[in-house]
Image (cartoon, rainbow, N blue to C red; front, side):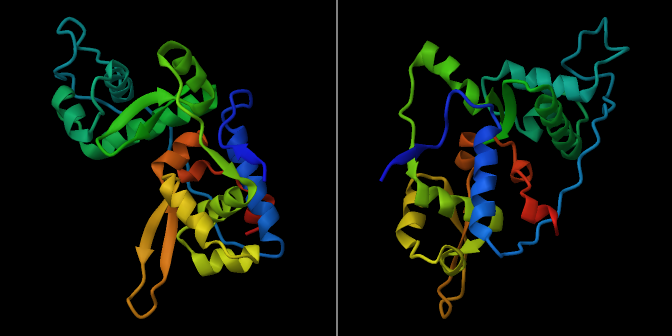
Length: 234
């Protein structure tokens, strides 16, 4: 069986995700999933305390907007940025405004086709390259072996991505084939993880995608998954 790469250097950053959407649409056949489009966050500047500790005293009277200050902190890097560490640099910054600034920046980056995005890791937020531009990093610092999946594994991954939390029984009813070994393979590759375990009597396990899945497909969040024709009918 021929394997297909999860990420390719040539296509646009959203092409792999589009292919995943088409895979899911093909698997649905006569299925009718239910997904609602999420409301977009308004791209607006957020006021900031003029006494912000990271500002130059000579320019503190007219401080830059919070979104730009958060962007500057992410650009500096060194450590993942959390709401608490941002508030220690931008005095009086509440967690909800920090989250709004991160979401707004990611929306701007997507619209402008920037080669980077802000991604949430376990320790905090990091400004990093999109998968399409990872070869630039690899040319400078050395590459990492590309993970490869079979066509059947990609089918299962598409179903989990769009129907999560998805059970093994649900996936097998759509594919018409046993899928346990493929789910285990995807778990080992850290593309999906157990999202919920049923009661001991039911022994049902539900699966969902991981941050690694988002990274490999160039998505900032699950809201960025392509909306297929079947999904848009609902």
